[in-house]
Length: 446
Image 1 (cartoon, helix red, strand yellow):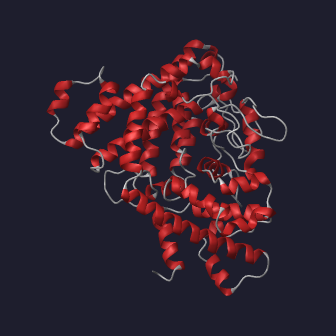
Image 2: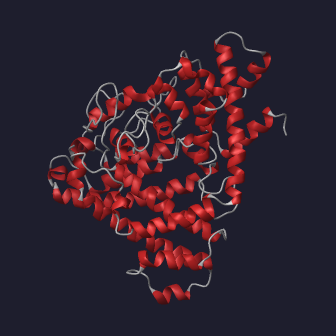
Image 3: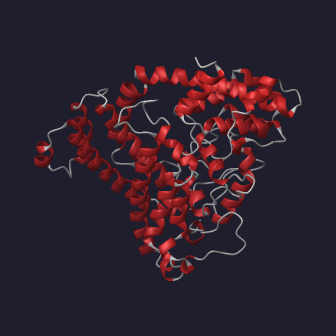
């Protein structure tokens, strides 16, 4: 892979080439990506979607929106630090093509901002709930009517693939959705493969999948434009990652490791003394002991340690990336940056206690149970009504259910796969609160 190709400013539908040296630096294309994402309705809905504690009304607990903003900030720092060194190593990128250090930061920041934009309500249990409706629920009736890969898209519903649909899928009058640059789309794609074969290798890029069957034609166009390396044969589609996707993943890993831990402490799910014990190895070279001792509230002490820990992990991830940059360009680096971190053991310790005390806490489990019931009910009612209408056998109840659909989802889809994906997409775009509201309406307000 080559940086000048990987940093493509092309957008869906472009007929002429966009050159970096001809860009207006006051309105740079990669920064336009960020703006388009942040003003989108899909991004705004993240303010009422679960990060750690579902349906929590506590002020300091993170939602998907605050998490995404934080990942974006960390991603920008990672991108700029890497970009500075890349331009020093390959000066022609600046001298010939006009790229700047901040371009790398802007691309990673935009992709990181959108990294959770396709996640359903109720956190990762929402993804599982959608998949299990089709795998073991009433949705299983559709299995024999779909191809293996279409079926896998449904039973292994993936927020990353849904996110690619959110930012690229056209609808009448809105071609290409947000029309982000191909550089940002490539960077967004942590798992540049289709749903089958599932986990064919230990390559981090094969861990999950990144696009649905309905989006594969456009994804192949993006991958081709960026010069991404194909790693599948025959009818299977898969590529090695865009190098900057490693930085998006690192930003996410850093934030959820440290900030979920911080949330757990502020909620009282993890004792404060664990903070210093678990974070001290990350901050020992930067902590000002006198400043730490002068902080009088738990929230301030934890906030100080969190900021230092994130700084240490950013610098470490940049070093790992730069040490492996040539292997990454050859498609021969197959691990997350944090897996090669000098702080890997410390991060694992933090994640282990977060799983035990936060993710498996009674409050989280209770709300995830509610989420399963809500999503199962919505999928069943809307899929049934939508398919009955297409088949010309809808009841009055089906017609009423379909009148609950927002205007932009009132559209006809010709194939069964497209209809099922359309309803999954609608449900996935609901906030936690809106999903519960629909559930109550369907159940007679109970």
